[in-house]
Image 1: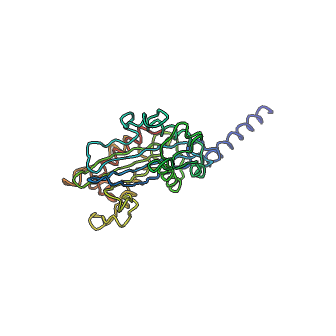
Image 2 (image 1 turned 45 degrees about the vertical axis):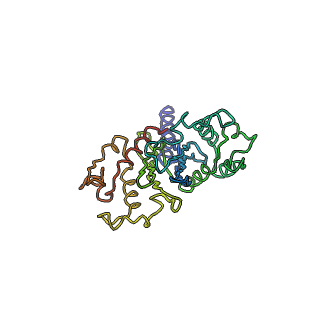
Image 3 (image 1 turned 120 degrees about the vertical axis):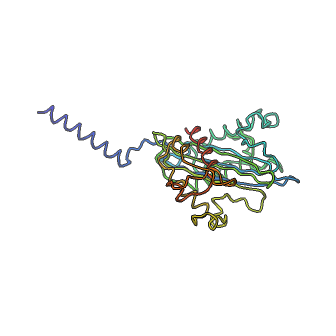
Amino acid sequence: MKNFKKVMAVAASAAMVMTLTACGGGSSSKYTKVGFGMVTSVSEKGEYNQVNTTMATVGLDSKGKIQYVDLDVAQQNTNNADETRTKMEKKEDYGMKKFSGIEKELYEQVEFLEGKLIGMTAEDVKNIEVYDKDDEHKSVPKEGSDIASGCTISIADFQAAIQKAFDNMAEVKADKIGAGEVISVDATKGQVNTTVAQVALDSKGAIVWSNLDVAQTSNASDVRSKMEKKEDYGMKKFSGIEKELYEQVNFLVEKLKGMTAADVKAIEVYDKDDEHKSVPKEGTDIASGCTISIADFQAALAEAFETAK
């Protein structure tokens, strides 16, 4: 009888632990919040403009500290459709190493910075000590600081993008986070398109949260992303479903929940006409609320899945 009572007590204790875990008291998810921020600026170079879109994807633990961060910059010229790599993707081709003062290429410095950001809060990032080294190098990590030992580039835009990521945080229970982007340049229009996608995934590799946006920029007069433009984008009356672009993207984001990489790749699309290719197939669930081309979103999402960690 004593052994029976002991067994029952152990079983009851185990059941209680399982109940608490199911209610969230013992969640083992790596990330509890995720957010994305993007800052775009334009520099006039005479016959063309240089567009800089700085991106930050941030994942937090239950204490609000950074456990995942992905930083990058899409720096493109409006007259050059051949170069569509980000700064991080250029690796050694960026050519900063010999000018850095610490013999480190730009991607190495950004990776070093990312490592130092792990464990930081929003306030910590904001309070990183910086100084203006000269007219061209402002907001550089302060000499003698821990970060300055491996990062001597300007970090102002990274700090601003990270702050936007904190401002845009969504609560999740995720095991992996990934980020991807696709860049194209329309030299005839003098326009750079940077399509971004971020995902948070559960233990089975299915989307629990995602973010999609496009920085479509030609000059400094308007550096808002397509999603930030809201009603100003002016698509509603031409959409055929009376929905503005941001509404259609938000609809698509909702439909992506629960999808795996294979599911996203398999979304049915067709070429509506020469200007509208890879549009959700008519009659499908997604087409009921999204009639824009999604090819670049699918490509950016594929990269986000591949890089998720």
